[in-house]
Image (cartoon, rainbow, N blue to C red; front, side):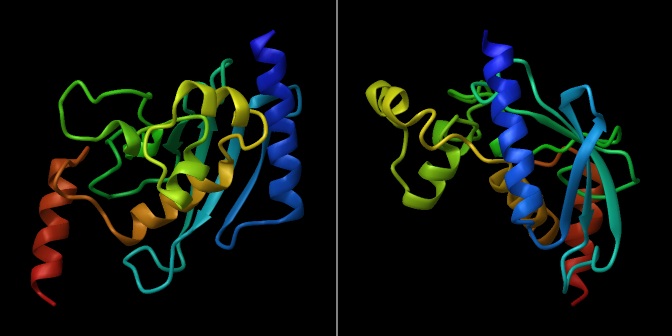
Length: 177
């Protein structure tokens, strides 16, 4: 049951994304029979080291989306503090909901089915009735994930890097300016 709801939601979000594209981003299905695996291309944002680059990635959604976050893995080589060597993107919005076991992130920074609403309106952690009332009315949107990844390319978080060497290079590069 949850997979069919997730499938319907993802179909709707992909249709909406195609009708109202996000600048610097395109998406499509890898396989027409699997709405849970998307092929995405992100164009490097202006005024960054990534400007003008085309970066391909795979966005994989779990069967219980939007309760759990998708994963994003670059298939193009990307040297970035918040991208693991295997291409997996490491940003708060893609981390499972709840408290961070390492104590670095606040629960409000991590994934939630209404992340877009929380992020824009700064409600903090929603109550269970809020989630029940607004879950299908205001579901998490792929656009918020995409905008977070584009933002990540513009402003790396070198305080909690997935790629320590890239973080070190990033700090040294910025120090020369």
